[in-house]
Image 1: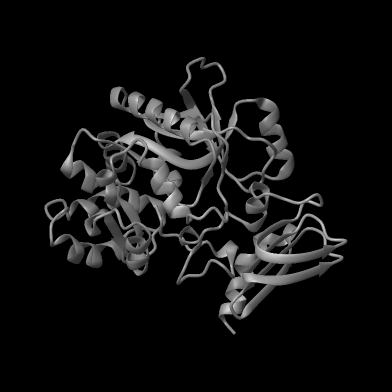
Image 2: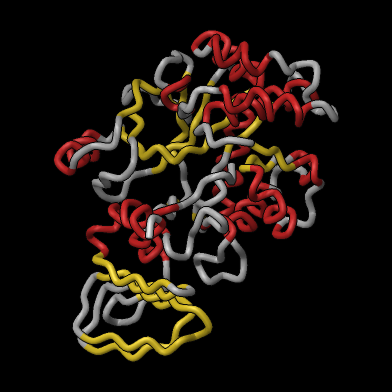
Length: 344
């Protein structure tokens, strides 16, 4: 899934050029390129579909020249994760009714790709045998209030565990309580299931949405698909897969992941994963002189010289005609600031 805007990474991430198409980590690869490479270690390249908004079609083909145009599945309107997952599932099911699929966001950071591949293979094996909706749960390392949580059955001794319920993003005290319980995982948004299991779930829990997309059953993977999607996709409800299916279904399971993970959703989360100096400053694409400065993330264009004195825990980003100097502790407000800036 590569259709998000990533507004909390403004001014680098914009509607025209969102974060998944940027080299956010300074690794030489963009986030979508890293995700594609990671998945292709287990999945044949020709079997990978990229779900994105139609405005990013050219960007996807430019950054992933190894894919064919028909592997880029275009959304004419932003409708959250449930509609795009149903759309892709029906396309895959028409090609192979016995397929097992993984749904993965394009903008996550995963360092141990060997462990990721092993976990993913374990999930595929399970879903080939079971009528299961499976997710990879991330072992929490601190009481994060920015993620949803998955509560699993602590009496279940199996490697893949039955999910009791999904929990909304908690406040700090609730998050601390979750960690103390020992049977809560972060919801990383990576899902594995057979196309039979997920389409049956949509039929049961989202019958109206399911009927809408089944109107195109005869045209999927044909030249007439584009016209159908242009007409009907904007009619779909704007709803996440969590609300639409996972919070309702009884056959939901979780595998506690054995790899480190970060959703790279904010400048602060990016700061955690970058190399830092002795004062915990992370610098991307800049030349810096830092005095009395600590815990900052600094990014510029063209190795610009950036001089900072007396700032602690700030986001400093120079991009084009925008200079952002903003407290890291208020980074959740950047989405609101972006809207204000776009209105000027």
